[in-house]
Image (cartoon, rainbow, N blue to C red):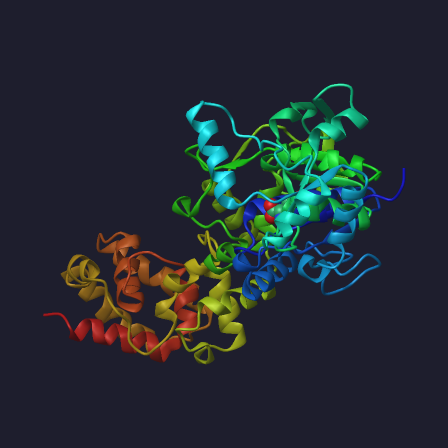
Length: 490
Ligand code: GLU
């Protein structure tokens, strides 16, 4: 087999969508598995919908996911440029080739004329295909139209291609994922390949680029299947080798509708901002269509690459289960080496003064608070009581815990005893055990004793390991907070 060359070809009309990330991943895995090349091409022929911000977002998101490309706009490669807007001088040559060989013709119809044709089709309850009115214009007729100032578009001549390469209008191809697919190409109509303003349409630019970039396999979403039939005909008309195609099922929201913003995040960068780890995201995205042969779903990209077979991809749609992604993310947070986690949490701790903690204290804080985190961003609300002198007490905690006589007694006794304690964690552990024991003898449950201390020190009734919290805060802060809890109540 000649070299495997695949590509991801996003249009920068938005931030990189998770669906595109999955397509990129499957292409990347396929290249890895086959010692091939993974190419990034930016499809920005639609200048109005393109922006540099989206191009940057595509680059950053793919990089964050570890989907590094071998050739692309920034790294170059033998078949560049890899940005379509920089290839505008290439497409007309190939359009001319198709005009010369009769597989394309100039169309001078105005938008109004085309609209009228469409209108008529609607009235007759017929699917619209172009009437081919311009197919057989003579040179003289074309000259006349040109003289009127009309600029022609160029249309592909489907019937001509059918006749030259196929016996019937039924076109078939063997899809890598879905098996044999076929379509009656009469339904396609003679589509435009070059617009009257001289720019190529998507279907034409893609074929020229895939041909010149020597793409061997095109793996993309099934929403492109009807385009694939058009593209096969163009490849054939140009005398080019037709790549193999593989179409992935759609990604649907849990309610089975198209995944959209109303369901939650859809762009990779949005997920990252919300506090998803890219390793979790890529692992989750891989499972949208691919299943590991050993049933073990938690896998690194390298492990997935070893097990990846394109023909085993499910051809049906996948459901984007946010709950499952959340579960995976919490798992990845638990597994992350502590130093990495400390770094990754920092952007979510900017409202606190991290300098209040030594590195050892910060490490300990992260160790004892990581367990319940689903998102990295959950850390923000989990740790306010590690910072500042005083603490904000939730109203119910005040009335239901701190204002009780039992709590007040516990706190007063705590201040008395703890003044002489050494606040290292091991020692505190012993001291607190004995302290709880004393109150237990008076019939007060150990958890009630601890609630009082926790409420006074953290303002909450639940949270991370209390002994560790006391050790991190240190004697001064702890006693201050407890004293203030005593003073505030009557
Ligand atoms: N630019 C197209 C898109 O973003 C890519 C289509 C293709 O992969 O051929 O949908």
